[in-house]
Amino acid sequence: MSKELLFVLALIICVVLTFFYQKKVQEDLLKKLYVYKANHDQEGFMNTLDSSYTRFVFSKFTIEFMKLNYYLDHHDYLQAKEQFKKFNNMKLNDRNAIALNTRMFNGALEAKDVTLASNIKKVLMPILEKQKEENYKLIYGEIEQLDKIYIQKDVSIIPDLLEVLDVCKDDNIKSLLCFRLAKLYHYQKNDNEVNKYLSLAEKYSTTVENKESMRNLMKDHSGLD
View 1 (cartoon, rainbow, N blue to C red):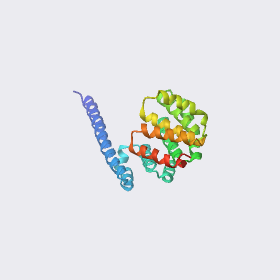
View 2 (view 1 turned 45 degrees about the vertical axis):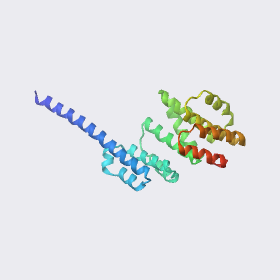
View 3 (view 1 turned 180 degrees about the vertical axis):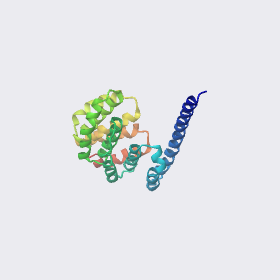
View 4 (view 1 turned 90 degrees about the vertical axis):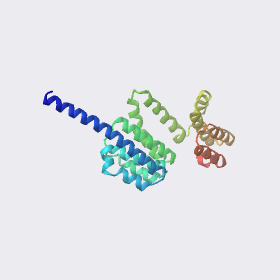
């Protein structure tokens, strides 16, 4: 066997071993981060992400995006907004730009920050329009619907949601549709319909947290403002 062939073979082996090593390290790091996140250990979570060890395994975008997710998942919206600004000077491909802006769009809506949500939509929709994959078309439709419900407060889409609910088979989606209907009926000040669909949203929900949230909203509709 020639020296050149031996060199190429050794290089291939090194690449393969590095790939499997990196994958194993990624899995171990993600497990560690999950524990920190579940225990609300922000210091441990952030210190792990900022380590040189983590920077070797994950891209800068992935690290900063995980930080953003942490803040949003723990409802620290002010910190999330500051984290979001860090991406301004980062060159992103379409896939990362969609993931980032979709996540922050939802976070802004949850925090009732209509101004930021509207600005994100202006950036996000042209990127989504260029995509040919079906999943991006679904994201486009979802952003449009959320805009109509949370920003425009467009009650004219109630019949459309009722039609989808009527044929939907997935309980999680049915719960979400019912919640959105309750929100729209709240804009109409129709308390009977609000309670009807909050009750259905609780019924179809598959998580204890969401069920409790629906029950609380039935007691106080102001959370639907």
